[in-house]
Amino acid sequence: MIDNVEPLSEIYETSDSYIITIDLPFIKDRNQIEIYIKENEVEIVATMNKKVYWSSFEGFGKKIEVNKFRKKITLPFVIDPESVKATFKNGILMVEIPKKREKKTKISIS
Amino acid sequence: MVVHLEYYDVDVVELEPLPANLIAIEGLPDIGLVGVISSFHLVEKMHMRPVAYFKSAALPPIQSVKMGLIQEPLAAYSDGKLLVITSEVPIPAALVKNLSRTIADWFYEKRIAFAVSINGYPTQRRIEIQKPEVVSVSNSEKGLEILKEKGIKPLEEGFVAGIFAELLSLLKDRNIDAYAIIAESFPTYPDPGAAASALEALSKLLDIKIDVQELLEKADEIRLNLKDLSARTTQNKMEAIPSMYR
Image 1 (spheres, one colour):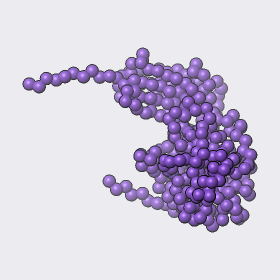
Image 2: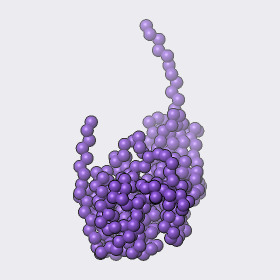
Image 3: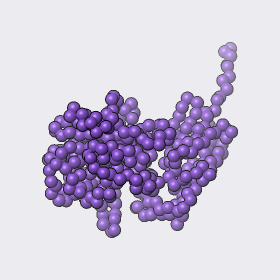
Image 4: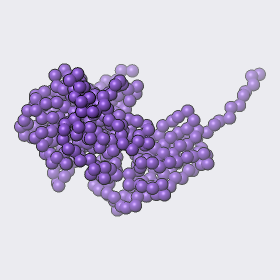
């Protein structure tokens, strides 16, 4: 059976952006990766060039065939897709999502 | 808030008598699983056999199975010269202190020659690094001189944390020389490249040949297959070590 596997990922926050890194073994080229943005959600799908065997702790070590990584990450704001930058190097995908700059409104005191 | 951690007992079950003067290698799950990947490679390439295992109520109820037979997940392997301790399951925070003490007492009882821990140190810029650098730490002046002689750069200042840090100190109390070889590593991803660098340093320290080419060729497979152990090890590490030392 061919299945998706959720890759290891990490999110860290800088003063002006969220950085997502994703470990993608067996992915050799950026053309194997698709990134989708929908409102506050980032979805990453990466397709391997071959089927490989993987076994999880939960699956009692039983090996299953996989050929895709799929990961959905939800952020606490609506993402502007135009501002998102992504790079792929040494098997790691890095997605940088700038934080939404909220316009400050001054409230007058009566 | 006071957090009560119950410290669990650890038993060592020996499968065969061990000679004195073995060189002990500790490669338990920690940053980048550098120790685990290195240990699995040594066990496989040097055709080591299981010689002991560790039992504790705190270990997760998991047994790996090979060819229909259960294999103890936290075990020691030997080829008659090296004694490698590694684990296929994460080490729970509540077990770190007592496991370290049990290993130190066992090394003392078995009259090991010296011990080497293999580990990773987390660096966010790892993605930019082709060949991770290695630093080292010793628990004795004599050990530090040996590291310098062998061309393995000592860590000048900083903190070390985890089982290997505990072990360095406990072995010093028992007058056993111990070293830690620490390679630049991804903080939370299995890192075969870091393990290859660490093994090259180990090769210099022990004057033995360790071929890391196969390890690098199998890097993708290792990264995928150690995904769950890596995730669980990161989770345990967060519980075991105060955030200021991570």
